[in-house]
Amino acid sequence: MNLHPIQLFDAESSTFTYILCAPGEKQAVIIDPVDHNFQRDVDHLERLGLTLAYVLETHAHADHVTSAGRLRQHTGALAAVPSGCGIPPAELQLVDGDVIRFGAAEEIRVVHTPGHTAGSMCYLWRGNVFTGDTLLINGCGRTDFQSGSSEALYDSVTNILFKLPDDTLVWPAHDYKGQSVSTIGWERQHNARLANRSRADFVELMANLKLPPPRMIDIAVPANRNLGLPHSV
Amino acid sequence: MNLHPIQLFDAESSTFTYILCAPGEKQAVIIDPVDHNFQRDVDHLERLGLTLAYVLETHAHADHVTSAGRLRQHTGALAAVPSGCGIPPAELQLVDGDVIRFGAAEEIRVVHTPGHTAGSMCYLWRGNVFTGDTLLINGCGRTDFQSGSSEALYDSVTNILFKLPDDTLVWPAHDYKGQSVSTIGWERQHNARLANRSRADFVELMANLKLPPPRMIDIAVPANRNLGLPHSV
Image 1 (tube, chains in turn orange, cyan):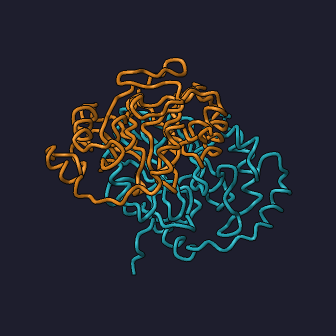
Image 2 (spheres, one colour):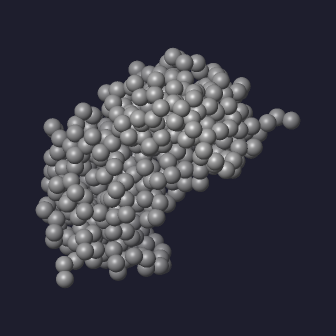
Image 3 (cartoon, each protein chain N blue to C red):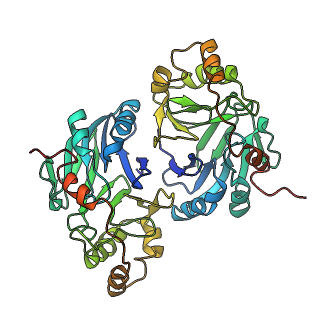
């Protein structure tokens, strides 16, 4: 059945971190934790009486640094990352179709959705999809740096995500307008960038966005490829 | 069984609004909506395919204006408010022990928890307690204005809320540190203001906080007593 994750917000980078746990279960998974929220997230796990089985990343982020490495050290969880994102220290290098198991019977299905970055993954769990920067609420992630591809993003969203059941809840990695959640059905019909638009039109729209370079990319990407831990010298 | 609500955040007043809905159900309830988030909240209901049965207020807020009146007009929902908060236009004037029913079999239990204001209520639903400004994560609401009473708040928290099951999830009306949720068990053992503290010590602590007056009290309280709608002239 459909369950909601616990959604935590980082006001600095407008990033959502998610804690997945099932009723009565003590094992949890965290998705896309942010470095300076390490203690906040550890405190949530403690308050909820949860142990951490896995730390998941949807991709190597360009706008914030992960706390995956520190969480792994602190909790004993394993780091699980997209195999195509160049994050060698992680224990699990995920490929499309993998299933991550935790608790008594929880399953997270791994879906490769290239476009925001070539390696980007989405994660399916109990009627929810955690879409990273692939699909945002009424928008999508940018595709103009770090192996991004508008063509690939269009294909990932329209051929994979939009074919999930309509009532699948969409939990993105970011929101900039105080929004929390959407559904696949609504996004397929109404998403301002992707609904009822051809691939060529979408590619042109994305090419004309002319966004400034991500503020933290030169720091964040190398750090995230090491799970946010200092590089050894 | 324990379900999580959808939690929405207002960055301006650090207020949480909650949407309660059960899997497969189309009826929902919203708690403590904020005026300038009216469209955001309506959009969430639309995306999730939900109709609104009730708009609930935990108290007459002093730091933001509710959108309860507009939501009621727009959706046909009924407004349900604590009877002791002086909000005459609401259809339901709740008293301790009331049960609000929605969907096929959803029940919200109403608990009178005076202290932040004399009328303040908490709401229980499927292993969650929506605590308003009575109990915050590792803190509590202030008690120095608008019928507040430190003695009453101490009694409400220690005699009522702390006697709920340990794993009851605590969803407050505000958080100022990026936190989302706690549990009764953790708060009873660790809450910085209320755990392991005598009533007299708590009253002294609250008396010495010397907080500035709430910024919006002169506007917000009269507006909220009219469900956020303009007063007729």
